Length: 269
Image (cartoon, rainbow, N blue to C red):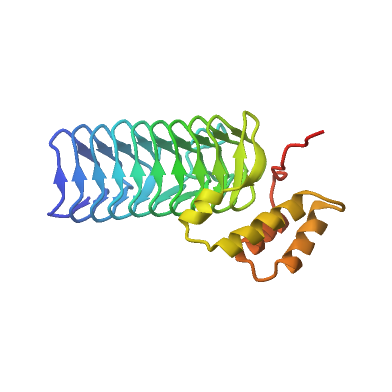
């Protein structure tokens, strides 16, 4: 066990032998930190937090009561193998959140980026890769092996199916079921989510200039409407809007390998 002398730990909490507690960490009442856990500088566990497994948590991340971090994944094939959970810096993990480590059948690691916000009751399954500045609203759930790019937002009570890829800057509306990939900067809504356009508010918040956004909007129409295959239209859009980084991101995503189909706009027919 390694506990920095500047760490503050409530007398009711249990720190198991082998755990590493960094400088200026604060561990409130009735917490449990497992023997293979590493808390970086300034991590705060407010109370009733359990962190176990081979889990590392980045500097200044904060975890609210009744969370379950690093426990055995919800995968019947898991057989006690050593797998990993990495959580980045400055994350806010609110009440009753659960995050699972990887599995031998997957990548062996669940990896969370920096500056994420996971609201009450949200869940991240095994073998997921989550980028920076990702937000999961209350009770949103992400299935195993999913990938969420930087700046993704998943609305309250929404579910992301296993193996789904959500491109950076995309947004999923509340109470949506996502079973297909979502292009970067896309906006998806509905009980069975449909792609309805680009996440324009998110792009403006990211500081993307108006000309680039307008070009991406035109490219979106070109890619998802008209003659030929989706990939033919995507290749044509890449040439038509050459130099537009948003369009390049969308086309790269379309041509990337995936276990899922792409989420498409709902047909008006």
